[in-house]
Length: 137
Length: 290
Picture 1 (cartoon, rainbow over the protein chains, first blue to last red):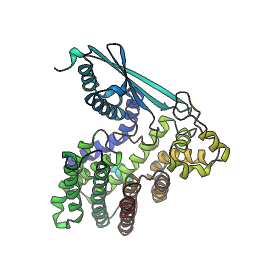
Picture 2 (picture 1 turned 180 degrees about the horizontal axis):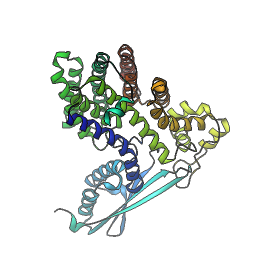
Picture 3 (picture 1 turned 120 degrees about the vertical axis):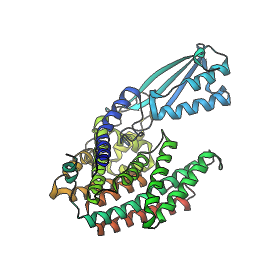
Picture 4 (picture 1 turned 120 degrees about the horizontal axis):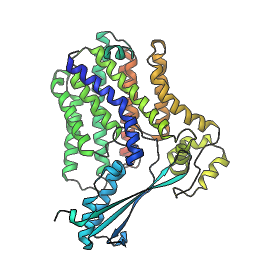
């Protein structure tokens, strides 16, 4: 085999060996889905509840009162964070909400339920705070 | 070093390896086309309107991939890069929700594009090495997540999924099933979703230990084909319970490469026939199941 073919074969086999444990660390630290990104963690954990709680300038936002644009942006954020965990940028959704509510600060609290190795359901909470000054006009 | 590792997955005569690769490459194109078709069907479910750029792209990609399946061998020099480009495009446009077998199909298509100009036995050995690493990686993930040692994952799925209730529930006593079905779902603190000692917990351990150990056993000359058949058994078990048709099909197809070309051909034909049957079920039920 010529050198570049050997390099391709060696690199891809090494990646297949190394990536699953790396992706496991990404799941543990950054809530990246075990089911996606070719980490081979399908059926390692069930897919449980993932929801958001929102505040605009400290006031809780009733999700049923969201404008269509804010709702769509949050659905998109939920879909992406379900796969990519905390690696996603919440700003597009938060800025849409900030504009709709004319709020200076929006917090998006990500609440994900998870099955522990002991068989109990536990909760992982992460809060993103986005200042409207960081949003594009 | 690379050659020594690849040789651990078995040896092929050049003609036999080339025949295997011809058959597998044809199957891989069919598999990728099936994936494209299925993901297209799932998107045209009323949530995405027909005629949107995504649907048009997926439709064209599916037609292109089906074209590569039917392309005569003399056109392989065009069909091979086309298939690789289309599957890479599908992976990129479905990211980050791309399925694992989508990534795997893309890797294999690119690998065939890169490696088929080299010695056929080495390319066949490379494909076998990938399936061993994929099996090992899946087992390693289950072991690291820890949800299979006490049967937590299976216990939850029996509670939450009709497929697992049917596939695994019969291994549990009535008392164990009642205990699980009395649980309050995924409320925080609920549980424990665990299995007490019995056939289901043994199956849970067998999956993790099998996925980690069998690829290692397959590196031993005398045990290689037995390990391949055992891995096929694991895949068959998953198929019966989880109905992962495309991942299971691709995995089973790769396991055929541990055997001579004449077996590979009918093995791949059987997997392709399974795809057609499942596709017919999908169409006849209006997309309800497959």
